[in-house]
Length: 172
Image (cartoon, rainbow, N blue to C red; front, side, top):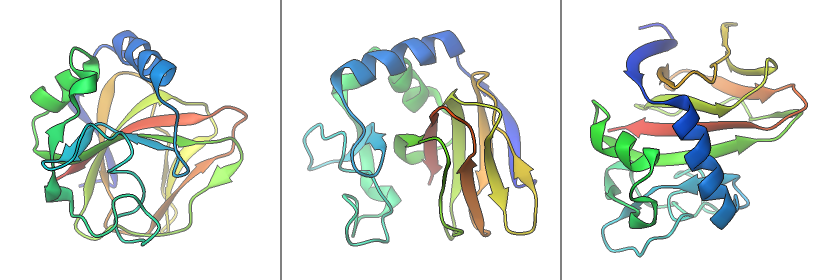
């Protein structure tokens, strides 16, 4: 597998952008710049429960595992996010909107055993996912899911002047 590959799974991009704007009219990104659509079975509809890095103690999802996230947040029923959750060809754990502001970069890291799927919601030509070995990828806002191997060291970089927003699904 290439580090990032365009899949055959797609949704209507205009509907994605429209439903994203609806979500943002009712919710704000938290300190992790994330909103999560999937909760654990014993949780109420909490858009922040699955946010952050599961491995870090200051994260809302610390101590949980991807397989714990099994209940779609019913606040988002009737949206493209529910459609993706129900029809995606792979079983997923967390499903999050992730925002990276302009002139930002994540630290170089890996996510052992994890495959992710990215849908670009809002992007710009300066937004990339970079791998330690030198490959870099721009994910276009085209409605397609892009499969990402998160096992090897990588980072995300937004060298643009606008936010970069991705819908990210973690494969179980």
